[in-house]
Length: 343
Image (cartoon, rainbow, N blue to C red; front, top):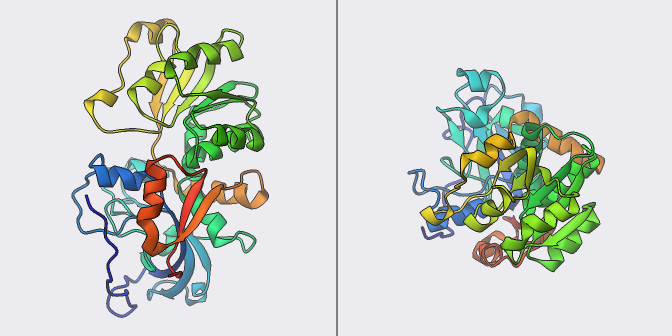
């Protein structure tokens, strides 16, 4: 799918804004690998044309009739899921699992890589004044995804936890694992610059992932032969997943493998004989997006300094393709943030 920069009408309160919605002027929006998945066809949710972008922050410019008018001028970050509100998943706060999503910004609904975005008022969460828009934009996915995944994995203090593939989400995981859970953190990445950044953020051990066939043995060496208690797989390619599982894989007994990254094609299917998983009593789980409460927790973590967002570059929105090319070529350390107000 080709991406273009187009001019579209700005929503107005009288004609385009629902009673319970707000109109947000976007000040910063982070790019995500997800945008590349739309470009290469890995993600095709049947909605075209559509504005991409699910990590947006800005200021409320106008509100619908049922929204407190005092919210105009409020600095906010957007939660990008809008569930049906009726199913068991929505009622327990897991909107990301709703089978009847009313909106998902940047996926099936116009997103934040724009000058303006409209959303339900409940999805616009207040940003602390101390956080700049540029630093706050990556919270919307980069930090929230890490918060959600670690909550699912139920990390215990002192556990050996491996992060396989490190950038936006990975840098959030490193800091959460150290500063919230007190884990022993092992990071695997091909980039020396990213390995250095992981150490700076608190990782205990970094491993060169250039040769995936050596990763499992290096992880076992670093864990006295036990293997990792938890692995966050943020790459999603056959060779990286293969390194995690099997009799001699990096995942240890009763280990939890949390799948976050993915790539298209049969060649990147996850395949493992069940016997090692049975004998080692391992758990394989997926983690998608985040809950609204995860976003609120992520904001608190960044505001308190326990997690710092890592921004590689800021670019004008019109240069979005330059940013996507950097992501595709693994040339960025941290997030690339687009500034719609800059030309």
